[in-house]
Length: 281
Image (tube, rainbow, N blue to C red; front, side, top):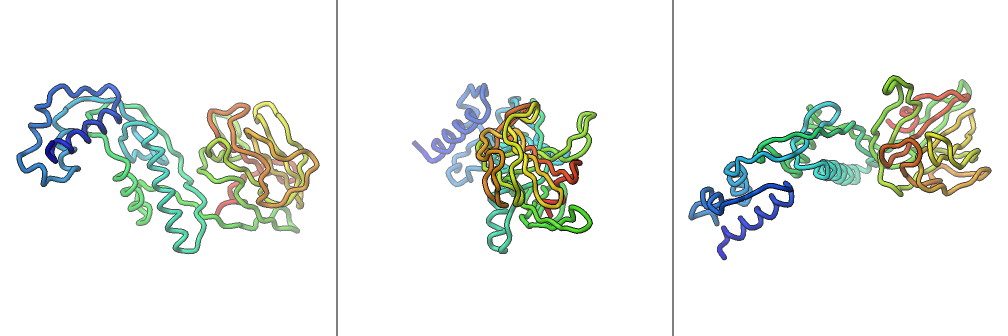
């Protein structure tokens, strides 16, 4: 088997795995794009030529970040790989800069489309392009959040310091949503991810509330309360004193939830306020 055969077989397997239902009928498609010196061509060049020669339409997804279309990918799973690639890059970057990467604070969505296979991009190039744009302040890029505690006045006489209650990206902000007030922020994370107390306090409720599912409520000094909703597992009980950063629950999707995430609220004097300034830069 020649080097060209090895390359085409590898590309064939890759395409069939990415695009379910894609039919490659004739070997002549490969022969038409691989010259006698194909062994000296890069794998990327050969793949690009094959994809152009196929001229077939496939089901794919448009990946949007903060309303901007950033890529055409084979499926949502590839979009998640893009996000993981970005996170890995910024984790390494912040380690070198002696900072702490908290997450990507961008709204990500996907639209199903049908396009020619040659139009579909790949994960690695999408990651590289988004990193370049983000680092240069260009659009489209992503919003990178660094973990820093921030003191915010809870009332006129005290200031408090909170940490983010879990690691993940914000999937929904505080404010009007679908005609109703969303009284917290949603942080998307994997089921089972740890949820931490945002600051020292005492658990005043740990149980089930309609809509919230499994929920923990903590009372803090300065007339502050925090709420942690949609948990899969509760690790504290009512009356327990907790320290900032202590695990109190696991991320889940209980109650009215479309997927695993933490719904986090901050209340001052019993009134919900925007949690974002309390935990993010």
